[in-house]
Amino acid sequence: MPVSRQPIGDLVEEAARGLIEQSGIEPRKVRWLIHTHTGTQLTVPGDAMLVRVCRRLGLPPDTVAFGMTENNCASTISALRLIERLLATADDESHAILVVADTAFTPTLQLIPNASITGDGAVACLLSRRGPGHRVLASRLDVHGQHARCLWELDEDRAEFDAEYPHRVIRCMEGALRDAGLTWSDVRCVLPHNINTYSWRRIAREAGIPIGLVYLDQVPRMAHCFGADTFINLAIADREGRFSPGDNLLLVTVGLGAVFGAAVVRYQSPAREGDER
Image (cartoon, rainbow, N blue to C red; front, side, top):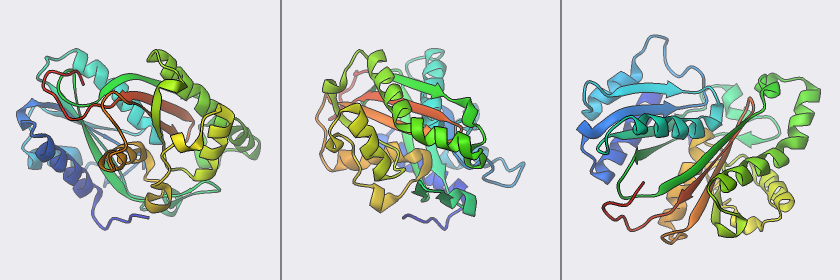
């Protein structure tokens, strides 16, 4: 599993800087820098980490930077939905950078009992109303607040979570597909959170989909890098040449607490100017 020796601020900055360089986006067009994370407290209280990152990246002084962690690993889907609302208030030149980054720096973060070993990772995404790139067709969040105790919930609540887990993941995925006007036959690939292969085999069996539809290659290589999993899987599978323009991809994650999230993305490559994103 990946282990970082860097401070979390450096991971966030590296991911965002690589994105800016790769995309060629002008820093002045970045209106928002949003960092989603599962670890509740990442730096010393009062440390303006994201402000410092914005300055080092050369982003404008009026760039708004903030973090989101309320839905744990599903904060990524929460952020996509929030960014959609923010961009709706801005002009077509405005962009948002979403950085998903965590380091498992405590024993509680390093191991989810009976589920996952976690790794350190960071990924950055550029979002706008228009432009070349993939298109977000729909997103969905299902909240089951009776599990808000997370790792510390009572035995009977944990048993209920485990029993209902596959059904809730399936309902969330199918709800997102329905919102996008699609069915399972339209899906090229499910890009999952890397919680483990066992649970995804259960989900595939009960959903009636082939396990080969779920991209699980990175589970033994990357472990569970919190909310970054789905986007890491997208980037690696893309580099492997698994997708063609027009493919519909389903990004899925679950945050302890419990929040089930899914987003439907239409793959677009090579990039063409003027396409919606």
